[in-house]
Length: 393
Image (cartoon, one colour):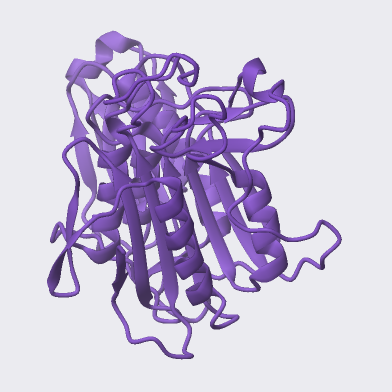
């Protein structure tokens, strides 16, 4: 099994993470055993294994950078990782090299059951469920996620290798009081052939009755696209949605914790930042746009991650007329702390881009060709602030 234990099993609160990445689908087009009756026009993918492994390594700071999940109230305790790639994956964690299991339905079900047992140990735990791979929808509201053995039985392709995400989460609400974070990086396109299959819809990973009481106190559920729309990932790079998620965790969102220097990456901060970060990734990569869909629920919003670093803001200054950009410069002054050196730049074509910490600023633009310009007080809110400026030559 690929359960990586980072803290001893006990009754204290902890964060338990389940990461699933599926790219090497055995029976889809490009897989080792393609089957015409089951592939639905879908191919093997290169992005999900890369995306899932990047997130796993960020969680444990395996890359040695600024990553590492930090939550003093619920420290990272277990990490379940299941990834299907052509070459196989390994992860250095807890003083050992772990061979990552592939994401077939039997292995995912076993990993989910282990993860669920851990999450249920304490009501103040935090549970994280992440999936990256193919997803489809039929005529109903269920979001079906495909695992690497989808279509193992050509006559009954949904008998194994897929599961009903929507009803899995609904069942979790009835069995898990702890805070949940659900990140789904998969298409939500409709396929009539799925909805019309007679009794062939896959089961959820967890069963419960619709009339059972909802005991969950808080869930942040963010899907990478809207209903009926595709999600995108470069062939061998991190997907757009996971890129935005890693940026959010890496410092581009956060809510202040009153009375402390801490910033909380919680559900409300993620729900506010993720659509904006994804829009920026769309702009950088081009192609068809993609917009994510946050679904917060419950009265509690326990943080996923905590930092003492003030959240960062990607700042864009769009000076008009464009001809003035190469002969103009800007300075950004922190209005709350005069000891902070101003941010300077400009004298370049295109939209000027820089970064600042969250806070109150004034932007000043100067050139020999026009009168000095001062923006007045501007509040830079993560993750992105765009300032159009029009001056008279």
